[in-house]
Image (cartoon, rainbow over all chains, first blue to last red; front, side, top):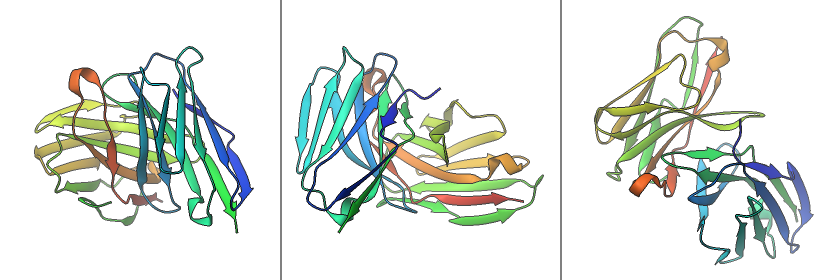
Length: 109
Length: 116
């Protein structure tokens, strides 16, 4: 079964708006990672947040982690058409990553 | 995709034939992974390697075998391809799992496999 589950499955917004994606997981983790995948390409690592961290920033990305609720969120601020992609969370519970099914983000110009 | 190549990038084969996919890295990372990506399932781990000749199974390893004779190469073999193995296959590499912790993984461009 999937460890991480993203919500929503699909999100469509206008350029300049913020996009928020959520990830829930089931077991304790060492860290949680977010990846982006453009159509027809491999996954690209965006950000890693460790289990003892609550929030992390990288450019226009903000990730939060709530281990008590077993959930994480990825916020992309001031979105651009180039942010159109699928976004995956991945949880590390020892020796391997388990990926969710992803959120398809479409940013309309 | 820098430092990781996969070959072939596209392959069409027939049911029952053997298929080998190759992943090559120039980053000297210890860990290498094979995933498959299918609609409705996300990415699922097939096999991974934590060193030369050291491999372990993932969640969907049935019908697949792997080999790693050199640090830079990780081969995935479908001994007798089936239509259910039609998928996009991704190789990934990682610097290491200190005390069982998996750090960032870097993905190759993928191989699209169609089994007729």
